[in-house]
Image (tube, rainbow, N blue to C red; front, side, top):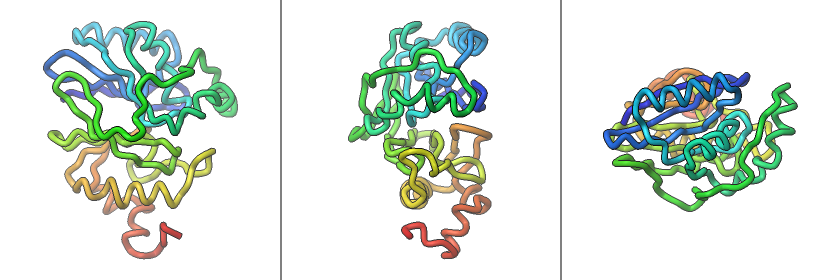
Length: 223
């Protein structure tokens, strides 16, 4: 599996294009917001002779869905996300304005509901869908077991975690997601987050203060 990262929109969100030897690709958390960002994405897809087949989202915040409708219209791909985050689609424009951002058309419906699914993929690639609520109720992480690659969206960042003070957020749940579902994937697992640089689970176990304080029994995350 091949991975390319684009940093899009004023929130500096990570959009990932992932593809394999079939030439099929998925775009994870399409955050492209401007014509310049659209062109960067399209040019990459064209230059690498890729065929987009899926717009795949970890969650529904505006900075992660800003480019989904562009993808749907340009490539006629389905939009896949947990239905538990569907309420965020209607609030996308208002949420963006709180950050001084004007979004264009955003998706009004989900084509493939990830809630309850255990797997989704393209070409020869299959992602295990791991429910990781806490940043949002329907947040999922996407794990590719052969390469030990994990896309964590806004659940886990390099030496930080996602916000839990937004609608639907919950500290106890995000820490349960991290401690009980993400850490067991193993230290060598490569983590590609929704913002910032990539990392590994091993690095986060040692240097992420939110994780370390729980592992040291300094904080009761079940609280």
